[in-house]
Each structure stands twice: as C-alpha cells, then as structure tokens.
Image (cartoon, rainbow, N blue to C red; front, side):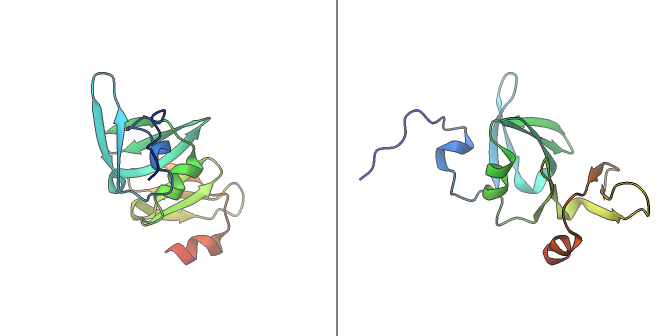
Length: 125
C-alpha cells in the first residue's frame, strides 16, 4: 500500500489531482471557506493561482487553471480562453460583434473574453 504524500496540503488541489470534485476548501484571512463548484461563476488564472469568482466574492485557490479544469470535468464549465474558465449555467449571452472581441456575458453582467472556437462551446451547451 502506498503512503500518502505528507508534503501535500490537505487543502490543496495538488493532494489528489486526478480526483474530480464538486467543492473546494479555500483559505480565507481567518478561516477556511468551502466553495461549491456550482457557486463558481467563472475563474481566472493568476500565475500559479486561480481567482474563483462567486456571488459572495472572490476566493484565491493555489493551483493552475488547467488543474482546476481537470477537477471540474463532471461540471458544466467551459475554457473560454487560456486565462478563463466559465460556468455555462451562468452565461446569459454570447456576444459576437462584427468588430472587436467575442465575449461571454454572464448573469451578473461580467464580460469574459471568448478566445476558443464557437464549435467547442456549442458542443458543451
């Protein structure tokens, strides 16, 4: 039987990378907060961290966006660009201007740039 990795934090995504999850334990200023995947409206990359945007505010998670994407395989998330992952349940509109950049408009009014192919998005919807 393999020994558990003692160097991995129990609060880190790195402790069990391959396991899909529907909640995350995020360190706050004075406590740990449980963030459910369904609460995440979108996530943005910040180097080796990810900023989770929820209705209750922002939460910083120590992992890469690619790791978070792998962990959310069971959920309805779409990689809109290299630096953004969007909960498709929070998308209100796909903006396709004739000039300018395409974007996903979320229920709260946030515009997230859309750099991926529309065909990939259609498949997820």
